[in-house]
Length: 251
Image 1: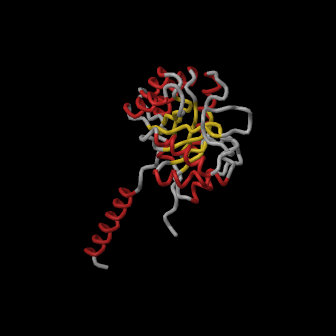
Image 2 (image 1 turned 120 degrees about the vertical axis):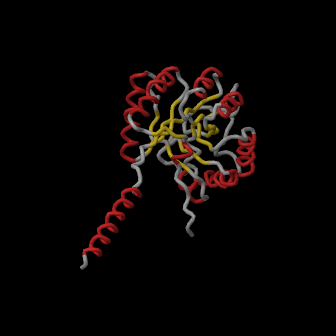
Image 3 (image 1 turned 120 degrees about the horizontal axis):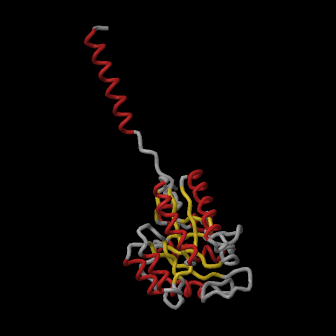
């Protein structure tokens, strides 16, 4: 091989290596979504969350005393708004007016539509309670086409391991996700901090994780501490809508 051809091949090889190095994607930071449920009872706590300089998915209970205020302030401050829809439980809890297994199709759909129509800026919904209703395959399959038509996602709070929500969402091509961690089942800052550590581990293992909390003073105090720490540690904070399982477009 002539010296000129050797030089040419060397140049081509070097150019290819550089191009390959430039094309290598940056490793993606593990993503965490924080969802705060039960909003609509305290204006001050909804306002505190909405004003945080971090992405928070705010889940408002329809029918709560300040539901529209919480929804409005969420949108005004650029947070993500979802509806925390009351659903029937296995226990004796009497949630706010919501969806039950005693409803026939027309009652169920009318109730769901009435709830959704009140909040035109929602991006999705999640279940408030729902250990009985989300396990009801039939009613989950009634709900999902309505969400698909409205282009809403479903976040399963996973109040029961028997939930049929994910299967129904996939069937009707509804973007969906499931909660990984409850932050504040035990309402002390120490316990909540431990749940944040668990959240970190899940996000590092799977690349992403979703936490659900509530507007308790202890939870809000931990959010103020933990969220900037997560960013410093290299995690990406994101709205829940960025961590969804999308339906396949292949037939």
